[in-house]
Length: 358
Ligand SMILES: NC(=O)c1ccc[n+]([C@@H]2O[C@H](COP(=O)([O-])OP(=O)(O)OC[C@H]3O[C@@H](n4cnc5c(N)ncnc54)[C@H](O)[C@@H]3O)[C@@H](O)[C@H]2O)c1
Ligand SMILES: [Zn+2]
Ligand SMILES: [Zn+2]
Image (tube, rainbow, N blue to C red):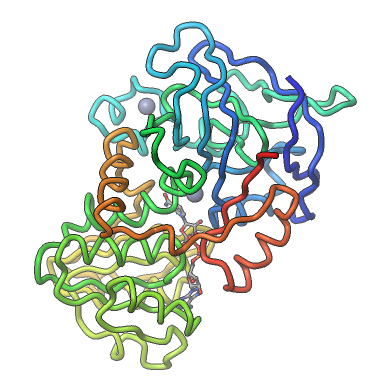
């Protein structure tokens, strides 16, 4: 079918909104009319990578309405409201153990832009292939073909256009705190980077009853928002004595990926605590082994979440007023995608959400 999509033709160049021909949903796939799609920093980062197949449609925080399903699909039906998350195989050891974000095929299914059989899923008007399976969805478009395992059904009474970011950034921050770092009532946590992922972690730490929540960011506005969302203290990331300014904590969480910040995030954790890392693309980290004596360091994918379980939990917390993620969102039309990216990069918008509808 003919759809409109924001395409990246060359790494690092602006997106162009063009007509694309999307293939019909195949076995285990569903066609989704995209109502909203968040822009995650991972889109911004990977769109600079020359290794990816171009042209490509990015976008991996889509929400929308199922319009058609391919052969063998049983978990969703046309008319269902869904959030699109990440893809997994369902059969490998980690998938069987309830840890789909560590699926043996995670990178192939989510970060290659292609189907597992190597096909692209879309063509441009000249018939040239367009990679359309980024995180099994490629949702910067009016329509996306997603895999059934990507989809989380949600209640039709919810504001569907806002829910897409639950599928990656928000579940990553909240899941890291609630599923991995074992934040408990009265424990302390330091969150480095108060963007979408970091602020989700701050809100989740408050939900868990943390006694001290230290938020670190370079932007005064983000530090201010962190304090409103549950941080008990905010620290300027440019502080030359950053570790001392943060102090010792039971666990820490880095979303910046900046090697010097990661080193600090490891250094502020007390023995027996855990430092969780999610930041991507910052380069290598050098640590003296004894600097993390008794501590654990864990790189985390997608907050260790099983999306079909965890996203409904986050929605419940939002309904209770305890996870007000809508405060991070600013909406844009699909045609405004380059402005959305600019506003995210310069810090004015925390979570851009594109509305591809008419
Ligand atoms: N591992 C995963 O599963 C996963 C999932 C989603 C996102 N990510 C990654 O998580 C990271 C964060 O994503 P996001 O969408 O929240 O990005 P973001 O750009 O919204 O947030 C990053 C924040 O870090 C702050 N920052 C940068 N340098 C800093 C420094 N030196 N000191 C203090 N703060 C600093 C920025 O001001 C910004 O607020 C990205 O690298 C993204 O690719 C990983
Ligand atoms: Zn798997
Ligand atoms: Zn993401």
